[in-house]
Picture 1: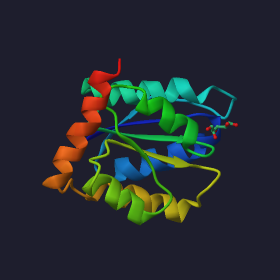
Picture 2: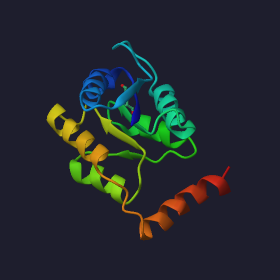
Picture 3: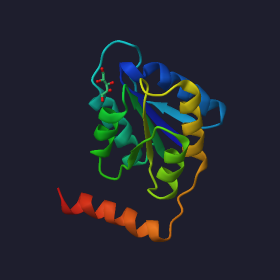
Picture 4: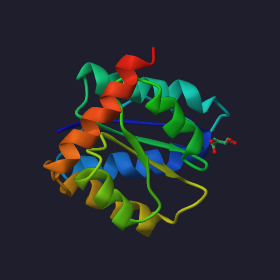
Length: 148
Ligand code: RB5
C-alpha cells in the first residue's frame, strides 16, 4: 500500500516518526513535505496529500498539523477525500469501518507519540465494513458532486 504523508512545521517531527513506522511495516511512503521545522502554511500540505490520494498516486494519506484541524479541513476540500481527525484508537477504527476514511489526521500538539502510533496502526489495519455504511459514504460523495 502507498501512503502519502504531509504536515506543517508543527507536525514535522511526528511526520518523520510516522514515515519510519510505516516504512518498517512495509508501506511505501510518499512524503509531500514539509521537510523541516521552518514555519509553513498547513493548507498546502493538506492539499498535496489530498490530491495524491484522490488521483490514485497514493492509496491512503496521513496529515498532521498542531491540532490536526486545519490540515484535515484542507485535505477534505479535495473531491474524493474523506479525512478523519482522530484522537484515539476507537475513532481511527470507526473512521475506517464506518466512514471508509482514506486520510488520517491528527494533532501533534494534542497527542503523545504512543497514542499516535496506536491510532496509525488501528487506521491501517481496519477494513471498511460496507453494508449500510456503503450508502452513507455514497451520500458523502453525492454532496461533492451536487455542491460545486
Ligand atoms: C500552526 O501554528 C498551527 O496553527 C497549525 O499547525 C494547526 O494547528 C492549524 O490548524
